Length: 589
Image (cartoon, rainbow, N blue to C red; front, top):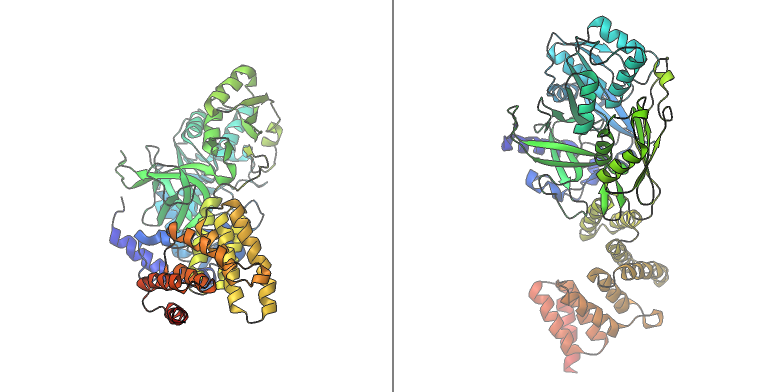
């Protein structure tokens, strides 16, 4: 285990300095003091989202000079917009070490066939570095191209005596199926093969054991991404160990309230301690994971990671929440396991298409009952050989395509993970608001309201931003133009949550500061501010606003009482002291 806390703190301090060399983080962290940054306070720093990376563009989070760059990679998300990743020579060496930590234990005697795609994605290159570091030979048989179709890969494996294959899990399944179609047995006809290394797709234990049965050798999973390199590698005991010298892995609760408990599912936030070229801080990679301490039979301690799939594949049926791993585990529990499958989300459950050359061995009714029991939702089944897998293509010079395992239906409401991102946006906006950067704060509050239109807090903070803008402009015409926007946001916040203190406070401010002819009502504002104080919103500014209300309603004695409360909290508050003089003078008359 890497448990040198001081070394991790040192790396985090170096990362803090390195981050601000990139345009993305120079702006994103401009309101944060990183001089005393410490790992135990990392949650106070903002998240980095895929949208941030896409918006920043290829050079947005590059933190080194171009002469230090060794390689560029990018990955495409559902939007079709790429997320960039840069690597120095040292980054590639580190990535190779990360992948080489898996239980395959590469040696100079190994010949490794790399089936990962070599075009733009990063695993093939990091695996190649891992092989070089171990002294192993490499056969670069890239997937998803016409140069190395499945029959040729099988021929290379047998003819060259390949000892390890590395690639996507799906490629291992398709290679085994191609071997069957060509009259071979993947588990018996490749005697030199001793291990398989996989990455790039969700791989639960049930699926991993299926691939092990297909090939008759152990399968070692690796978890990472193009943006981060390899975060965790599986040992010979099936445990995904986090590369703790290189990463801080947080697991965030779904509701955005903080960190999940050890072993609890949540959303990943990855900080790259070692990456030089394009470092990442609290990268919200849209994965569902759990992390917990482990003392493994392999000799390693530290933390183990379980990957449950991508947020985009999470489905919800009432109170039942299913991640990709839940669906995958159920499908791969079938006997026989299908050669291809697709789960289509319906209103109350799934319609699952199963494609297998052994489909005649299934009972449709029995499969439906089994899957419904495993997933706890209604399942209908369609058994259709050839519907999902063109077996003729496997034997031809046709490149493979990225499969879709779970097809979700369009649903209303916030997307999974939005609560975490919402709280992060509100937190960033509040920091800017508090520091007087009202225009930038408003942009973040607007983004929060777009992310979750039903967030009363987002609308209330947006109203607060409009309130500051109204205070800042001199022209009455400008104030009148901004007033409807303020009123609209307050109305939206109160409609969603009439009890939200911030919304009530903003309504009180509107009633206090708006001219009577435009709907102002200081007497009604008193009730709003008293409500806020009763709900714990007890700072000096609220008491001052209450005092202003009493001044406008000709109650100077109550105004003095409110100002005394304000000054007990902030004795030097200039506004409170000035109002006190006015209230005292008014009380004397």
